[in-house]
Structures are given as structure tokens and as C-alpha cells.
Length: 379
Image (cartoon, rainbow, N blue to C red; front, side):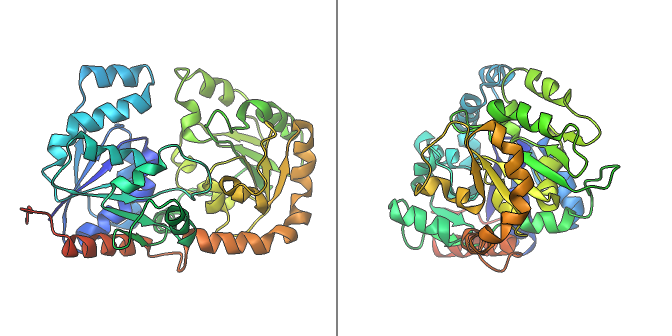
């Protein structure tokens, strides 16, 4: 059978999906072709394959019209993504299955995707409200990392038996292969705090708290600081925001606006303390339970809201001037939160931690065996 694995957004998607594409090819002998939208995706795929000692797969760039290219030039990336899917649906119809890692791909069915099984390999931890998660019902098969997210979609009546599976989180397999590549080193040898603000305008702490955290660490002698926002923070502004932020780097403050370390768990695996708002990267950080601080400068009413479940895993700060005191007392308060951190991590990603790539590939293979495409391309 022929499988198309699509990377329709930034290269961060590679770290969630490439290892599953490898397993589909090597373990189950599927004919796998990867499609990408961002040219830099190729470099990330090559890096992952080298670290995992996996052979290269067939690789194709999505065809793009002048309109799609114009949308990308002006950073209208959500609109561009939908147009690119529409422009390539006929080619994707040649496959027996299309595997994607974001909900947006669910619209392929309404665009005319008929022959392939449409498969979602979900990334993220499932706490934050996502306005297009209803698209999960448009997939023939949805693969979830753990029971927390399975239960969430059951409660919303968006999945049905036989069309979903819990497989774990393949990204951990990728990180296991590459984790020795890039230790985060500061000349002073001190541990570092990771600040990881999200991009979503209504929820991010970026504007309200960035200046305060930079000032707070500028002359500290106990911790370093790594600032690594969600990559989509830099979507707009033609690079101006990234350039301004980079100017804040100094001896004990590392600013990252686009390196692979932002995407591959380098920072989340090595930080001493996590500071953020709604990014699901906090769950990757909790593979080893450690202190967390969450920022709520907008004073959102978050308690008992399932979309803010992770805010129960550390102190929540509303006033920017309280940020540094909360960070500095986080280690002594960690014992309060550690039991719940361990519980929610298991519910989010399941056990065992490694092996999700093969489990996901097997779930896809089993589904295609029990639901063979009509007039399938057996090759």
C-alpha cells in the first residue's frame, strides 16, 4: 500500500511524525512518501533519520500556486495551509492513506479526498482549547498519546470505536535518539530556567512578562535563562520580533528564535525550572518531574477549567512583579505538585514511554488491513 505522510506546517511536525513514517516503511513494508510545505523541513527530516539510523524516504514538496506563495510571503500561514491542501488533494487521492499531525487536515474530506484513509497522529498534550479540534471526527483513524485525550474526545462524542487508538507519544522516540547531540551549556556552569511562552494571542504571557523575566535574570548568579517561545510567536512581523528578542541575549540569557533545540525537547529535557503559560511543551518537560511556574497576566478564570489542567502542576502568577519570587521559591514548593505531575504525565502519554512510533505504525497497519481502501493501490 502507498502512504502519504504530510507536513503541512512548520518543521516542528517532523519530530512528531517522522519516526512513525520510518516504522511504516521498515516494520510494515508500506511505500511511504513524505510531503512538506516549508523547505527547511528537509533538514530536520535528515537530522532525525541520521540520529535514528533510518534510511531516507521518498520526499516531495507540495505544489503551490502563485496565490499560495503570496500568502506565505505575507505570513498568512493559516490561509496558505488550507489553500495548499486544496491544491494538492488530487495528488493525495492517489494514495491508500494520508497521515497528518494536525486537525486542519480533516478538511481534506470536504475538499474531495475520497480514496485514502485519512489518519490523524495527534501531537500536543490536549489541555489547551483548540478551535479546530472538532475536525478529529473527519478522520478515519485518530491516534492519541494517552487516556486523558481519549476521554476528552469521548466526552465530546467526536470519536467512535474502531476508529481511534491510544499509542503513546512518538516524539519521545525521536528525542531518545538525538538527546546526546546538543547539551545546553553556559560558561558559568549554572542550571537554567526555561521560559516557553505560547503564541496564542488571548493566552500568551509574551508581551506582559518578557521584559520582567529578562530584567529579573540579567544580574542573577544562581540561574541562567533560556528564552524559547513557541515557533509561531514569530509568524508575523517579517522577522522584527525575532531580531528584537535576540538583542536581549547576554552571558547568562540564551535567546532561541528558531533552532532545532526549540523543537526536539533539548530545552525541556535539561531545564531546572519551567516557566510558561499554555504550551503543551510543559508535559514534555515533566518526563522528569521538576518545578513549574505558570503565568496568567490576563487574570483568566482558570480554576476547574479542563483546558488549564496543567496549571494545577505549579504556582500560577498573575502580576509580573511576582514572577521572579515565584520562580525562586519553585524548587522548595515542588513537593506539593510532584505527585499530580506524575499522575497527569502518565494519563497524558501512557506507558511505556518509548515505542510509540511502532505502536502508531501498527495501529495504522491494523486499521488498513481491517478497512482496505476500495480499489486499493497495492504496490
